[in-house]
Image (cartoon, rainbow, N blue to C red; front, side, top):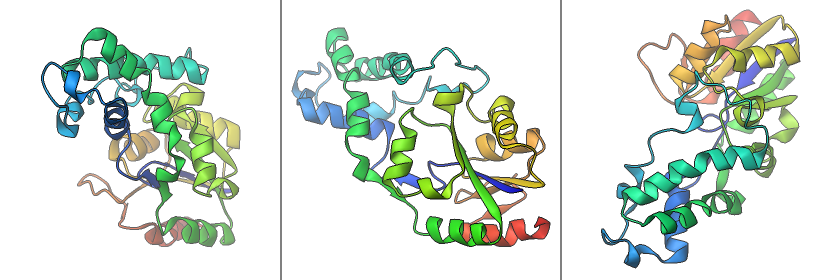
Length: 237
């Protein structure tokens, strides 16, 4: 078997307008609480400055096997959002209320999610060349619904999500989970837009990797678009 393991967010798809800060800011707009924040109207930039810590993927060395349901996973993120809202001036009870709405806001607009234009034709080209596709990504528990919405489900044999398996890339167990489930392929590559999570993570366990869309000086293989991937992997096909 020839296997390609793909990241999702930033590699295959994206949320139009942003993800976490955008969802948290939309909550503020929905409930019209800007006027009651003691520090004055809340801006996107101010909220963003408090949204850069303690997401699971920022501590990939710490497994979270105990967060084995969607409710548990989202509950673990609630303090992150509460602190962000407190940081821009909301009182504790208001921050808690706002944080409780982030999940529904993030998930309420699946039409915001898009697949990049090059994704489907490249996946089809590679499948025609004998490659199987799996997905390994750090994402929310509802990822399968998002992948289905953007029309990519039929192209993937399996989807492995950090919220489900309990390990965030670049933790070695994230990649080992995929290999254990998929068997030992004759050839395998990892493709993603994060140098640390996708490239370093994969190559640490012996899987060659291709960085896409986001350049990094340390990446030995880079594809500006996914159309470069078939050429790169063909040398081992």
